[in-house]
Image 1 (cartoon, rainbow, N blue to C red):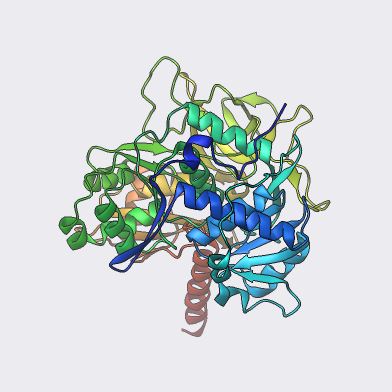
Image 2 (image 1 turned 120 degrees about the vertical axis):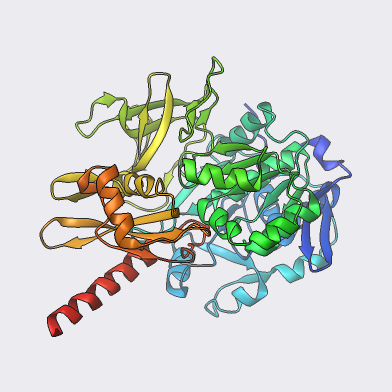
Length: 502
């Protein structure tokens, strides 16, 4: 079977006169057509080959979202090399460790970021790509079934980031399967999530294969995000709950901006609860809301619509996609309607790169063990409960932070909640919460705590609640729970010291 290179565009897309990417730049913009992008990606591939790099070698990418980033990414793949996008949020020591771990022969990226690397690193600044002569006729590398295309590193929240090995075949299948579903027909997509994260990268590959224009932002900034939707009449956007919370604080700008073009809002990283759904509805009354789920290791194709057309419950992620096999396994290792999600599809990773210290997350019959806990209802709809690793024991009760967040977000004064576990001498661990209040409400932590005791199981109530205007975001625009946990522990330690001195 012949496998198409993941970095190659379909023939129709190569001759598409529409802009492939538009990047707003003040009152102006930077634009590249599909044909120009195709020729420039060829030029990058040819230049890498001319420099002596051979198929299978690793080329790292270090930069914010840009047209140069996606051009370099496609060129690396076309030359048969392995692209290694790396988070710009990693501290220098972690960054250098990752470059050593993947044996990067070259680092391509933003000139300012490359300047911080060890002097011995070979580097190629994005600013130099404009000097390459376009190449229209290029012999693109033909991959084999096991040819590696990408090495994406996890966030490292539980230790040294792990390199996830992804092939041309696996993510070409992702693109073609999503194409068959006509996800992006007649859409104009907005991308503000970072290209070093699977969500944005997989979406960019799909927009290119679909022949639709992408509005690209270097990073998420709430006012620029709102302005881009209005200016370019974007119809298909992705978001995570903190982004919606930040938008809700820009009431004057929202009122002055026409955002009616948006037809699809694809939410990720957290369940779409009733409070969040209502906030989305305030901004986009008529948009379809997708409660998305995916992992770097297992790919973005997991769930889909019900085969009989049933409407999914609000918080549900959907029904098992027909091309994916799913099952749930409980804490006793038995198949169940509540447990850790295991999946099998052509999108699965090869495994983790050079990590003999990490148990392979696969069953003997080839299912990927996600570590995410779901429940499945009588109609076959799956609903995310929480990460198995995030579960903690409080006084003998198993608690998922999402359970406490769901309870808190039912309170009329709570816009969004983030719950973390802190140590407790008696209970072992206990939940504490950070809350973003609704704009038109008065939030009182002690009153909210008392409310949770009367509206949910006593063991779920947060022992401490702090109010905040916003949550810190990690590099993928998800809530940085490590930072919130550290801040909570500092507050509690300070309070304990004051009590001892009193």
